Figure 1 (cartoon, rainbow over the protein chains, first blue to last red):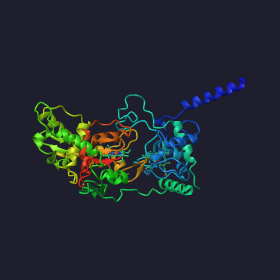
Figure 2 (figure 1 turned 180 degrees about the vertical axis):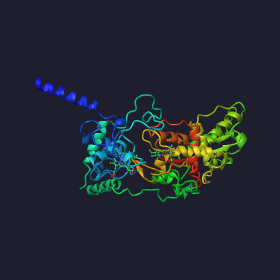
Figure 3 (figure 1 turned 30 degrees about the vertical axis):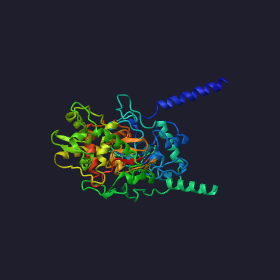
Figure 4 (figure 1 turned 30 degrees about the horizontal axis):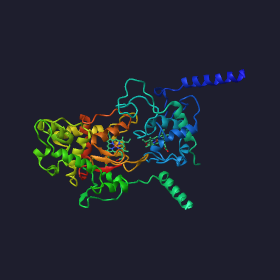
Length: 158
Length: 283
């Protein structure tokens, strides 16, 4: 009983230290557009990643087609299909592309999901108003990036 | 039956997910009321370096949406035109004058929509139709200004547009208007907001493609004001610009601002050669 409780506390402690160790958007190390280490210090959850592909600040299928997500309506055509994307790119490359695609693909129309500086007329989400002085949050958190990458890793054809 | 609907479902999924065939513009032709022929496709004006052919947004809409614009009895935007016809004849302000007192019939405005925004010598700046309407109201009628994107104003712009339908858009970009045009061009190609997207990223690089459920057009303004089935009202050019900038997670410019006036001149010039279509119908 006591033992069990102690384990739970230890797990919570581990989670919070891991959170504290998330790499800040301004401190991510890109090598040829790729990012070697987990941004959150934790593994990603592919099921959570699949959700982000569809909704909220991710909304990846606004621009990409994914056969695995064919049950969801309206896949966009601005980017290439992500079918088989894990055959084409390594995990560090996928992480780099999702965090800041413009380093892999200069001038890309794909938004940079883990970036907080260098914007023109940054707004407060979709209000049309100025962002103000508060801290800028990236489009996706470190853990959400890892979740999306974990989902992309499942998209294999070979 | 069961089998059949399953098959259709499969095909629908395939067309969404399968090869990204470039879908549109379609091949349909637009004639309004069986008599006003509208040019919805023509060679791009010379100043456009990256686009060969320009298309009206009408060509990117579904057959159902397209049909609503083909007859004035079906086009809900014409109700705004009717409202504006009442205002056109009604005296307002300290001078006891209406638009009709100075301009006669509304048909006298034929050709005006096609050349705006335009350099105004007296003001020493490029002005939009909305600014000219308010200039008349304030200085000639002694009446209150209308709100830039308010319904009185947008209805009046719809009336003035409606009598130019079928005429080619032909805004001047040289002479004194040139520096404003350059400013508008700069804005058109600037990536804004947290999504870092410019007008050109969507309406020049990606027209014809789907972005989620939306079929991207060239973002032309020859059809403004547009009646949108989505918000069931007439929408002005600057209100549309505001929405598109907001959607990049950016701080927008205000309707009537110097920036949006410049952007309107530039975007209008990308449609030189298409017909005036307003009030048009979009989704």
